[in-house]
Length: 80
Image 1 (cartoon, helix red, strand yellow):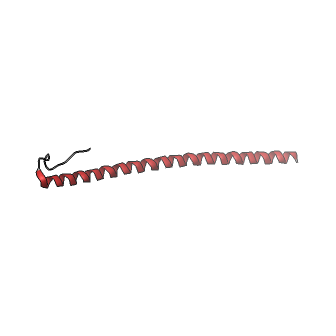
Image 2: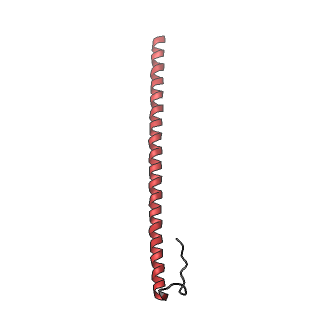
């Protein structure tokens, strides 16, 4: 939302033009803060999802390695 404010084209005159600019600046700050929060929540959710997926993959890899080790030990014990 961009609005050009000048004393000449602002109907309320010089004193209220400054108040209007302050109000717009305050509104802009609130909008920026809301957008920052949305971005933070999105990043947090993505990182959480990625960490959960990574943990599942690591668990799967560790289980596969454990089963392979047990299988090797079992084969070696039958050979000996």
